[in-house]
Length: 407
Image 1 (cartoon, rainbow, N blue to C red):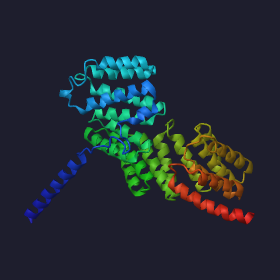
Image 2 (cartoon, helix red, strand yellow):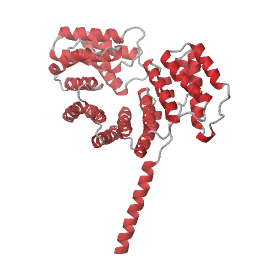
Image 3 (cartoon, rainbow, N blue to C red):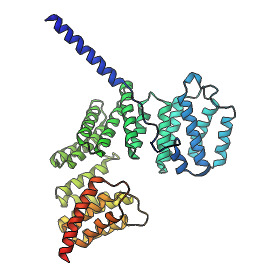
Image 4 (cartoon, rainbow, N blue to C red):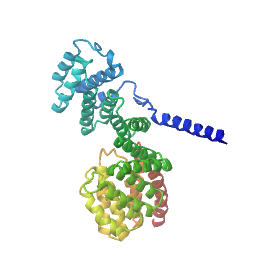
């Protein structure tokens, strides 16, 4: 009996060691998209002329430098390389804030053996933020990735790459970087990056409609946030669980998660307005239209982007239809329609059209209802929300039946 117990204990110990080694394993990450024949070609697409070429050459300098072992970097570039980069920089006429960063990267070419990985990472992240501010997501992702390659043992840059790839819709690439960030964060005890990466994994799997997996990632992030005192990250995880509950029709659970997320976010958090918008939508779903209208009207002031503003107006139109406030309904519906039907609109307005259709259906406004469904059918977006598209198609069939009956 003692022998059996000893064997069992030894087996469990070996199992724990195997599991521990698996958890510490750092997976590789995807470095480029399948259709990306030239490394970071998006930089040349987003920035024409000398600026684009200078950014691309600087990025290539960093990725080459990062790929070589530190003790072999001396003499990696020609002696004239740094002067050439500085000459290109003077003739390109770049933004002054960008000029400082690119000058620092030129110094890496001049003295590759003594260049600091921490400084290279910091500078690449500065360029990434500059690119984000200018709407150049390909450039932002490329330089964030260069930052992560310069400091391959750091979790925070790896998380930034995964987060940017997720925002840019590069889901396979995002997942590999987020998983890498989790492994690095566990090893380095960087619990902020660890918990944030779990939140983004939840977002990723929610987009894939794998809600059970998304819920597990959000729960892991919530626990990590609570364990390490990361209230904002805990709030983001609870926000994700709230959206999953609402999607599943578990509205009571949704309200509970929303209240907990509000407490975790606290006043002044940048995502609080987004959470309040989602709560207002929950109230519309529960047909608590009177509660939703003042909230949506307050939120509308800060929602200045055409896409987000159109969606808020469409939900407001649906709430107004629910209370029978015809004038508010017509005003909100018309304003939303003007935003999504403007010349050159490129956003995916599927969900907005769905809310406009639902608002019109509630008041039996068959003309507007057909208008909303027809626009989606004749001008389908390139990357439409699949579930919203299916619901809009059902609404279109409903509109056709009632439209012919009215005729």
